Length: 149
Image (cartoon, rainbow, N blue to C red; front, side, top):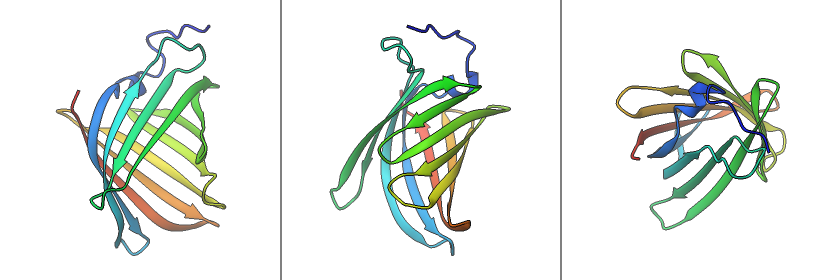
């Protein structure tokens, strides 16, 4: 079982905890397509070997729908690699606390997105996703979150 050094992925480790916020999906014309609440649990398990990072997410909509997702990151070649039922890809730290992701969608053929995560002050963070299909931007997602635990 690997034991990861405490200085591995310091910007990613800074996100440990529970985050609540809102995801807003915009189409290419910046019109709201969807908006829902989120609770995101960012964890660094020390119990199952290869997994360095685990994220559990609960999404809820005003109409009563909800969804739960879990994904895990495995370190390899200076990045964290993910493979879930809906996407696969990697994240890496770009410096100054910024995290970048490049994720290929499995549930939307031909689609992928780039995510930028930036930590603010006082327990706030912002995430933006830029969605592309066949080389064309078709959606942006804005995630505004605050740490609650």
